[in-house]
Length: 244
Image (cartoon, rainbow, N blue to C red; front, side, top):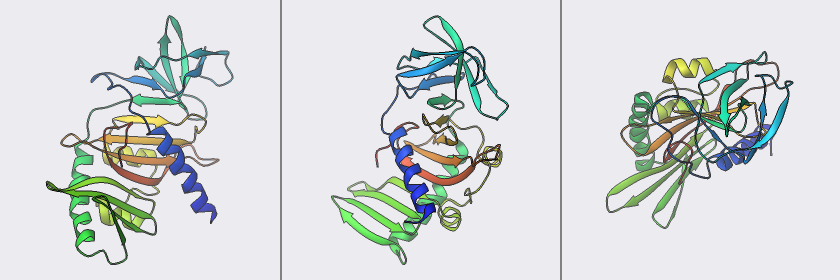
């Protein structure tokens, strides 16, 4: 396995674990944090070197009245947990930011047409059918759909290749910086960083017209102040859950 393939396999495992459960629906307005771990360090200041203590985190959305970045450009969230006020670092937190995304909905419309073309003429995509679920795979890409009485239902799409991303989604997001992604797609519905992986960020855009989410996975490498996109997913379900 190549170094790149190994990295992507590790990232996919982390993302799958991060999306493997469904958290409560966040409030519709405001900025809210959902802890991904039972215990997290609550710091006195937005600084990893500031005094902190490990506290038990409630499995619910916590109001975030303010957020800031430290000298290393990592996010910190101001919270109050059971009367204890302090700052939580970004890793281990799922942050509700904005509403549902019209941009993601437009991307899905392009994807649905491109996916239909793959189904009609797979060409360099291999095809496997099992229990009504058809999976198409190619180097750097996967498509999964369910075919039933009501037609074709999209379950999952993922790619880490710029050409597949451009062809299937109508926009090449691979290698974009986070500011470029935000400029292109707007404010994400959810932003999260898996615990123990502060350099990995997932920007999730929930579609307003169907039960689907566009997820943009970014990794920040040593010496960078911003992450760049390493893969993109489109899956059935709202941000924070995936049923593929």
